[in-house]
Length: 156
Image (cartoon, rainbow, N blue to C red; front, side):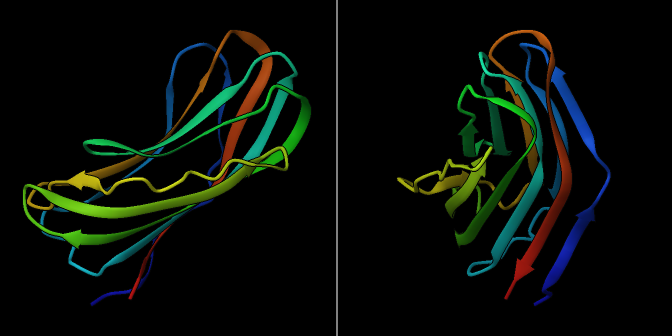
């Protein structure tokens, strides 16, 4: 019954305004490491600069599917803050396991919460990798998004 931070990564990663998805951060849980009732919190924070025409899609994904997505609003911004806070509670184990998932966040001070409409499938008998990626909807060299903090915690 461990609890506390399992990742605390302050290394900035920046994605320039290209129209292809780029993974910025990842973390892998070992097989059988997840347990019923385990609460996982993932916090990511950074900055975004936008020309006001294009949007950026941030995706927090787990092995097997997306956990949360946030799409920026096309608005001129320079080093504007963004943040994402995701909570997952393991509700069942095995090859057909589930995580109850909810996320809240904002980009350039506009709320971009991710509603919970269904559990997320997870095979707890295999490794479970979470990743944060960014994808701009068009190329523009001046558009950038950076993740500056990546924190993963187990809450008991």
